[in-house]
Length: 427
Image (tube, rainbow, N blue to C red; front, side, top):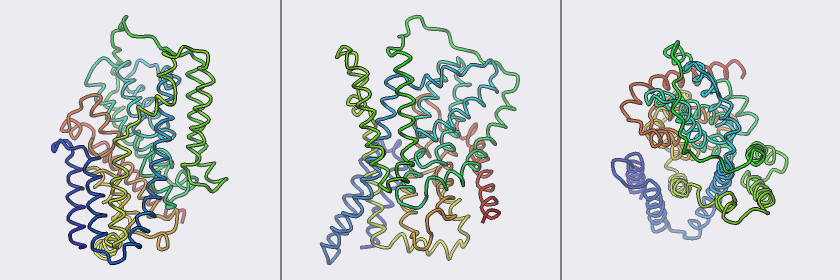
């Protein structure tokens, strides 16, 4: 049975990694894998009651992550519907490409720590179309935005789905992950920025021609600011909610969602139905990426089977005996995340190592959050942010490897080395 489960999981993993050439959505593959793995496990197991109990336990952990992600994605959609992100983007003005690169990098870094790396990439890459006329410049900026968004998402519990998984799973706590990973993540960004600003020195920003037919913003300045700062406050206060109440984070995000929904309905209560329909939270729910949500459900339930059959713990023991060094193992996992999706990698790692052996906020979990979060920048297919940028600007895979991958690897290694040195000095 164990061999069959491993073969199926490897095939599912390969299909996910080869989503684009295979032309099969990774969400479909993940669901198929989850169904097959649990079916085989249930048929082969002698105790159906135990299997059902394990499935219920796995489903509860998966549901917490899914509810949290759905709430966070909906809040972001409401802010975007009100053009709330213009509160930040409208203030970015400079005539030098190198200066613009620093501004965009830092904005993407801090914005992704509060929202998430995928949303930040979409917002910032879309902004570049309004600021830069030259396609080559926009491609270069899109690559740096991917690095900045992934680096910014790694150091907060709500900035990247893999860090969120570790936070909800109890492997890390909000304050400690922010204290431990802020500087390494910042260095991950600063190293590529320093190189690119040198390469772009002396070059001027060439703005695109204004389009007189472009539609004007439909929302008022008050509505944009209200929804932007309220949405931001809700996301920031979720870790505080968890600390004070000791309830799971998804309860905090659902509470915030209710507040945002009520405020939105009150603000638009006197407006025409046709105008406010696009701005309501009910409408935002229809625009969230349900394909990604379904993918998380499938892959987390698939990994749960390997955890219950002790396959993952056996792999962990083999790695410890073969490689030996924990920091090398985690850095290798980070490099692998450049090729395959980091969500199943982190989910597998959570099953490989127990909280009894490695308590919350230990070196393993913090370094895992950094490596899995930032390693995906090395290749454009290695993160949701990279795939989004690839779609928005039609970035060629080979172009990214030639122009951006080296910079991303430089940042990844610089931040990793800094974290290892920092951890040994502080502990």
